[in-house]
Image: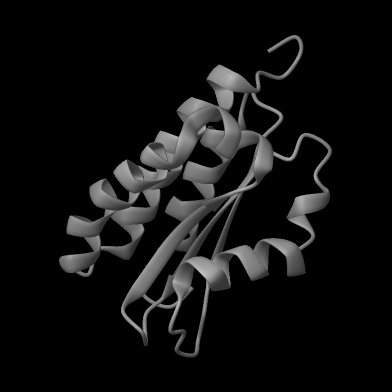
Length: 126
């Protein structure tokens, strides 16, 4: 992940996934994309995250060359949080990206989505 502190992002992912059946992934595109959201959806499928049994995987896609990013949630998580939640997370992450703080943006977005995963998809016994 160019310009991204992999350790901090992995720590954020581990924290977000703790206590939930949800999965969180980050993908950095090394080429341009005209539509980051569509690229995120495609990558979720290529990574076979849509096969996660609970259909509650979330992918964060960053395309630095295009200066774009997207957050995409699979069917079950999208159904419970709704479209406005994703728009809010993107809006909250945008100032970080504008400051070239990709790590901070990802940490914030991952933490916000982790809250929703734990709320709606708690792991049994957690």
